[in-house]
Amino acid sequence: MASTPVTPVQALDALLAGNRRFVAGTPRHPNQDAARRAELAPAQKPFAVLLGCSDSRLAAEIIFDQGLGDLFVVRTAGHVLGPEVLGSIEYGTAVLECRLVVVLGHDSCGAVAAARAAVESGAQVSGYIRDIVERVTPSVLAARADGLTTDRDVIDRHIQHTVDVLMERSRTLADQVAAGDTGVVGLAYQLAEGSARLVTSRGVRPTA
Image (tube, rainbow, N blue to C red):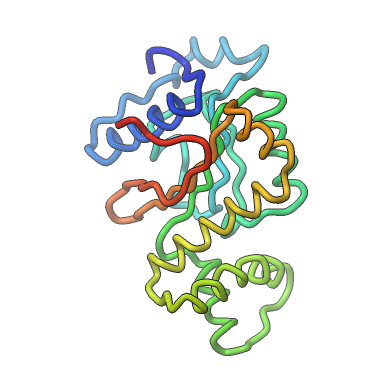
């Protein structure tokens, strides 16, 4: 990457361009050398916060062809939101001055599948996995109410729901978006193809 993105649009364009390189099999592997490591030792200045699912197939720096210090990554199963996640995102935008927040979901998500199974069968999930399922369930119920049944549609609804909840619960982020300082997007990643597509956006749209 020639220069660090400084606006929400530039940040989103940089991520999508990196993803296109990844899909094409022509990654640049930027900012991954010893010089970059040394440069970052005193401080970090990532350009985007990425809230992604913990799925092992969703390594953000790889699929968006970024490097050390580029992304401030927060990951939970099903990209569910809790106080510590909200605090981490706010730290990324308010303290580190990231200009973009990405909610990254994906097809064949185990957390969404578990929530769908729980809704359909009524079976209870044990342990702390239950907390994850309960946080995903509103998305599943909303999709069902709208007659959405495919994996893609339910995943998209969950991504949209996460963005909505994030904006509702974080006044800090909502104010940043309203001021035009920060953008929020929801992206859906396709495991087989390796591509990320835009599902929803607040305050930013890609230019390419």
